[in-house]
Length: 365
Image (cartoon, rainbow, N blue to C red; front, top):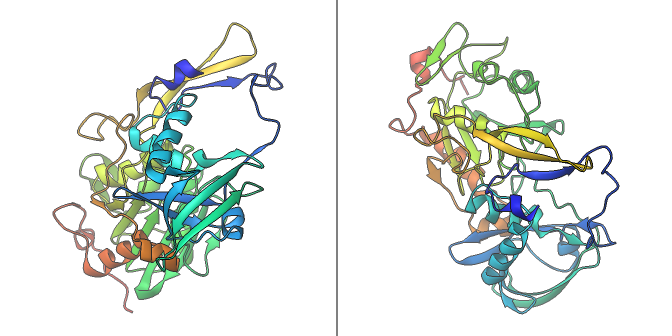
């Protein structure tokens, strides 16, 4: 396992086979792992609380607070040390993949773990807090805050936004993602623009052509880098902004890549996607207790100027860091930026798709 961690392959792992499911690591803790009730973000050289809920909220930790020290160690140095510890046993495809994992699910620890925190609240008050791990989710939901009146299921959610915009968030990429997207577009009805939020997407597998076809007007073909034809009963031909981050992995990255590389949408986010999108091979180990999974080649070879996604990730057109004041107010900086872009108009030099060239007209408000 430690050897695989040095391959810089986010999919590389030793996994229990049918005979090894009950085998325990020699140093496995008795208490189950849980999250601290918060996720973090690094802005410049400072560490901030991105979200606070559950155990962290109960301890008096507020979103938007600047973390000064964790267990007596400067917060950024603590994060770097935590990265090194996690990377000793887990493989990360890129440095930003390792960082984002550390700031989210990589914070998980055995139940009962305690942290001594020194922080500055959004109102600039110095505080000391003791956080005890009890029972909080360690899985990031992606957005800092979801829009009101969200509909959908565990894989895909959507909502109508002010100014005639639509919002769609995908938690993962199930096989029927094109059909789910079509259902969301149908429920949303005519929109002036769509925000497709991929933050926190854990991957899966889907029909690329079928998915992209839902974003091409009926009877039309998109062919900037790869040819796609319109597909489905309900399609959307207007402007699209996609939100990404280092929490987007595997097939979620492929989804981001087809929108960027094939010229259909404008991408924003606080970083590139994780950079762990590849074809894998699984091998049985001689003991018969475990299997070994490793990547054999990168997906989307046309991404990153022919380098592929693996080891690089999908770059946003525009980097949008969070603002601490927004975090404190429960406002998603990136979602607000996406809305502003759609109101003003997508930069024409960055995205070749022109809705008017595909005979699409925005609905009357």
